[in-house]
Length: 527
Image (cartoon, rainbow, N blue to C red; front, side):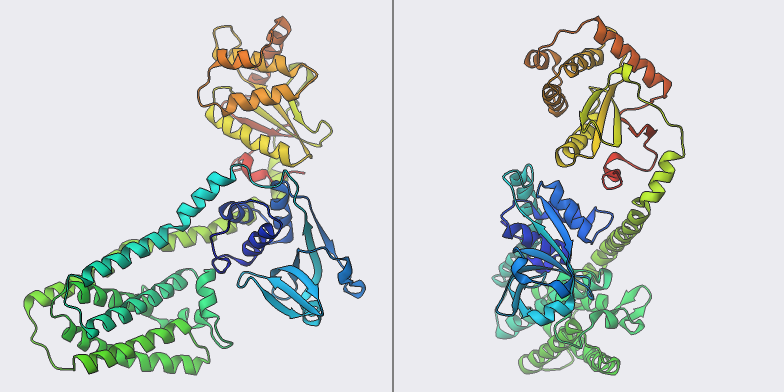
């Protein structure tokens, strides 16, 4: 059910994944990740609660006075919030003075109940699954998640078999095998260093770096001593060295003696690195691993090859230069994209805090003309008739963005009862206009007492890729009279009055949705 390891996920995401698994609700990990990260208050209890509500999982949050704490009143599992770290944990049960819980690192962990009470701030979140709980289209979305999660393993597998293939093409010796394994291992560790240097929030690399109490990769890798220049770090130099060495080992004949000299030149750096970490009183696990692998390479070179000045052939020299140039060129091409992607992610988070400020949104929204939606234009009304928040959608039955917008509104109506949706059509209002035919038909259906039929008809129309009015009309038969034609004419005039220039046009309580907001953006700003 859940392929992605929790250690690869941020705390809030990992705990929610574990919680849904515990209560047997099917939601893909990608959907969980997106729902939480798109929430304006992520990471928070509100984000967790809103996502659970979106998947039709009834939930409640409580602030419990720890002076009145009684574990017998708890229902498990529950999500608890820790006050100092700000983290969430999934409490599976409390028995015999022991709290058994799950977090982003491990599935089964325990702590003394007294320690839990010190760390816990009294906030808990309960949820209980119902037959309707879960994600629509789960299987398809889970399949997409699996394909996405298999990209890197597939790449690593292809790389591994490539190396195995090369092994069968060259003369295998213990020196060649040992050097290949050590260099490949060092290259993998160095890739982790590169990832961490660009994104120090990566959970998997964070877990590697947090082994031990005095380990802090971030302090070491973000220091000025970790860089040769502003544009070049020691991690990058290591990547060039190990990847170039591996290519040379596999593809360049007589490269080993020259690589032995290069390894010898690298050893002074290991003393400086260890000395700097000792002086800083912080240890980088990945950095120390690199130093150890460099010395293991030295031992293999010393025992298996020896250190003599090799006779340098022109072809060997050129081949080695190309071997070391390949990773440099690849990294020069890839690095800007990775850096920009990380900067964009940070910028998106900052913009989200600005854009999802409810006070700012309400000020921008109401600082413009307000248009009433008169009863005589007879819009299709869906949702809670008593809701204070009214969303009006001006739609074109043949507009693809209108279909997307209708789908969003339909999902909201299925998961919340605090909004009302009104649909108005913009048409030419003459018999030869295809838009007019559909608008009249839907409006006529909406005049019936049973509103469920018009909801089905709307969903059926907007969900269909081929807009066949005749086939659709047979499925939802309805006589269109002169009164309906008058209604559509009034809607047309109203659209002209408020100057609708594109569809879908969205109004919130009579105010046009302002730029740069889109309908999906205001999901958590309503109410």
